[in-house]
Image (cartoon, rainbow, N blue to C red; front, side, top):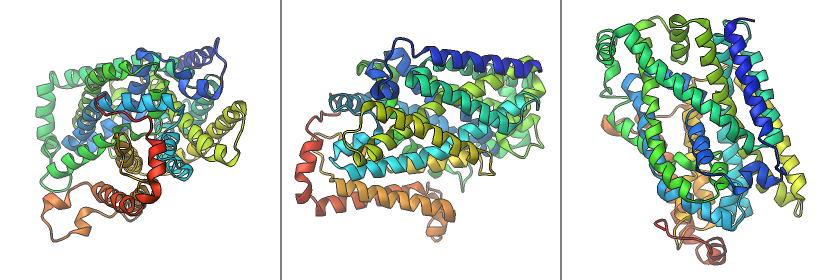
Length: 495
């Protein structure tokens, strides 16, 4: 066993032990397993929210974005900072409603808000479908990273299966508590690795950040500006706007929100998370350094790996591999738990009314195993680039945002039919666009490039909102009681 693989294995064992020990003194009921008994303090809430922001995709996909697309990659930094700011107003309201109504999953939130079992089922399906590509990204990235940083001692497929089994070990036993404790070591590692790589590599190869960008301007000058067409300014603004709007729509964010013991943690995190998001900038520096140092590299997803292996001794490469492994386990475990919880609370429970809490917990754990295996198999197949998979998932969960935001108003004028059909139309358009590779330029060939370059997701979101209001106006009289029941505990967004 080489030193790199030894270090990766050591950190894997530490994470498993920490995850298993997190169960001590706790009775793993469904609420305790899924949302920590609503007893997490500000530190754990921050670590989990930050952990979901910085995954193994941050290391590979983000540096790949900078390598492939240059300045256009900064959209990720922009929408992360803007999106986290919305938590100041958004998350305390969601948390209060969830606590008052015993909500444990995102789909259950919609179900109770709109007093509709069917809507809860639909949101659960959309959420799971959106999470599967994202979990696949994590497993695929982990396999690539561990295989490379172990210098071929372990194959990508073996790394995926080992990581998946480790993840299942502590998730099955400790649930969200295992994720929270594992996130403490994971966040320390990823913070250190990102900052070190982002500072050391530019200085090592170019003497300064100014020297880095001067070198990039000589080798690939178009990488430092947004192009006039394609990934232009209008694309950048529209992508940032849509992504910020839907930042907290990921289903795996909901358990972290519901796990908090009070609302104050979210307002503090709203200040800290945008600052923490600046770390993405240092990953970009790695991608830009790779543009100069790895001119023959074809796949940008390998930029950070190739540059690190070129620049460091095996022991430090092992630390990078361990970081990528842990950066898969924490967000991956949260995604799997949230998906399994949604299926259990909004599909299984309505089909079997009165099912015991123990049975619900067993059902959720069973779905965690099933989804893990499915995503592991997908991650071993050929697929699009990591960034493309991520954007497809993001486009799907964005369709939940309009009806969720409007449900937080004191008087919600949206009916369950409007919310459901609006989301259905939006999701259908996203799926069509994804498989046909339709662009705004294809839809509007005669319009100026400022319109053609807009993010195509605007079409799906606009159609969603339009249908939502039209259907709601037509079904308003038939849904008065539903809205009254669903919104009885609402508060103002400014409270």
